[in-house]
Length: 268
Image 1 (cartoon, rainbow, N blue to C red):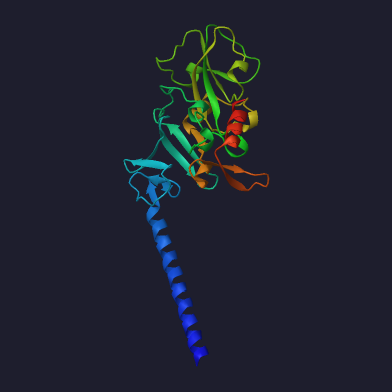
Image 2: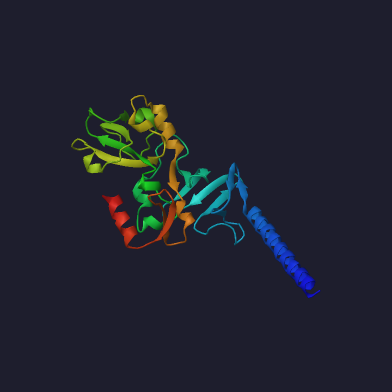
């Protein structure tokens, strides 16, 4: 009889634990569902959160704003305001377009990789470098020269025929657009008197350097396509950074000497 009572007591405990697990799972699902929101065509879920989301939702490093019920905006201080074009939850990327760049004209201020690599950028929420520290962006340069220049390599396009140049940028002499250049600016090969007046970023696919068939229409598309940043650091707590080890397993590492070494490596 004592054995039977022990059996029922154990069974009761198992049932109680099982019910608690179901209750906890149901509560977790409800919490997750309440955090999922939409803004226009965009699905907002962890780690992103909207400004008006409940406190338990998302990661406070990844706050977005839904304006006019359909326009998703990222305010990324001190680097500006950006339209969110898309969020890819599979490869941890977000595609942005400068808020002031809504037409085929040159935006009123330059934008380069340096905007997102100041300070301790290895642990920043958004990065221009993806896995294996491969750059996710390509620069577009607006070059101004006093005389017409014939370039023996790479691709330049006459600027006025491709985009509307505002009064903020001089157009005397020969103005041209150069894109997809990842070397240092000192190795760009500019003639004497040439200046880089403006820089912008794109993540448009340049097809592995086969740029011979790119037109001015393509350049407009490149600029309006925007640029991608990685948010893989969301997998780690603040002050840590995400990386792939030799076995392609994603790991988190605390900011320290390793991060400084990586930053030095990227700056070279």
